[in-house]
Length: 296
Image (cartoon, rainbow, N blue to C red; front, side):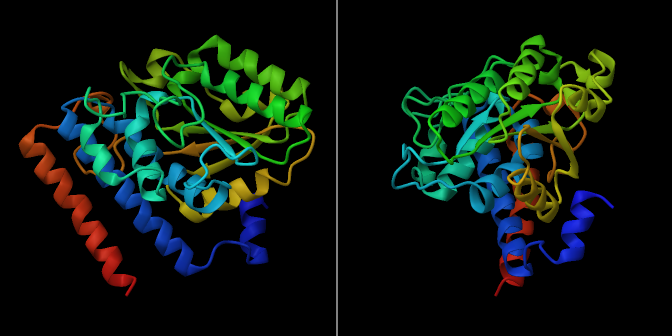
């Protein structure tokens, strides 16, 4: 019986009302991310769509954060190591109340504060500036180690892409995380199988990731990254693990939620044109309308 099967047997999975609310929020994250990339005429939409459910669960179910006090010492920290998917992060932060949703219209604009990669100096709610792949997990290890040294009770989360795991620095950080017994650290890998040059399997195979992480002495949980209840249960379980860090291997679909973008590496880092945007926007708007109607 898997960890998540056990949670289901015990009835610990979230209730239907919360599940519906998170599903609706994730749809809004996707829609706002799409709008931001289209308006800017640039940005990384494919990976933003694949990670939307994960970020939604983190910010609206799991993490202790307060938009009114974004630098609170006791807050949980998130490092978006795959920083190019900032459109999804910014959308989640806006919906959480860290800044107005109107600000998303100035994504990648010199007139705004939302650059193409997370910026901890100018964007409320961003805990670490990222962009150069592989470096975010090292920063997360440092944050978690600081928490241990300070005897603080906050947790640190790092979201990585599967293509990012080709960076050697990632594995150095994983070794350090176990050496210091960072059980306050949880990494989530967004495994959508695609990167800018195509399939991760073709560019640089990294599987079997579960066995590799286990060999680095990490606790491993595998989930469907679009099953919100399962992602939430995995994050809850990770918080109970002692003396070792946890990684959640989340299988996802690049471009999730927009029919013509799904499983298409061509949408790694380009914006839709006007005709494509109308189709994509209509698909997400229809989903949001359906979910809102069901929630009444």
